[in-house]
Length: 119
Image (cartoon, rainbow, N blue to C red; front, side, top):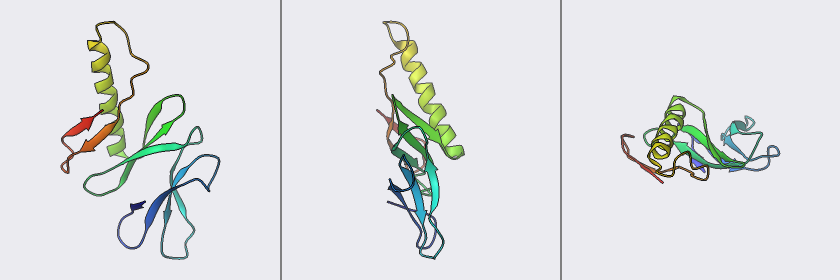
């Protein structure tokens, strides 16, 4: 459950919208729910939101492997930085080549969003 912006709107991770899960915004008004994020390929297995605004920046979907799907400029930055870290790890791999089993995620981010803990 994620509070969305001002007022009484919330976003929830739900499975009652389609064949895969979605993040859906519910307002206190009579407006119908709005789908904020969804992937037709796989269920949402996680999400990243801004440490400052709480805005949903990216979702994580997991089919054969986890994939960050950006929803904003912040999400594109997350996706690019995780790809950069993965490439650095692959380059440093003494066995040579990419480790296809390696899954990276961001465990924590500072409020200023300038320090991340990657696992």
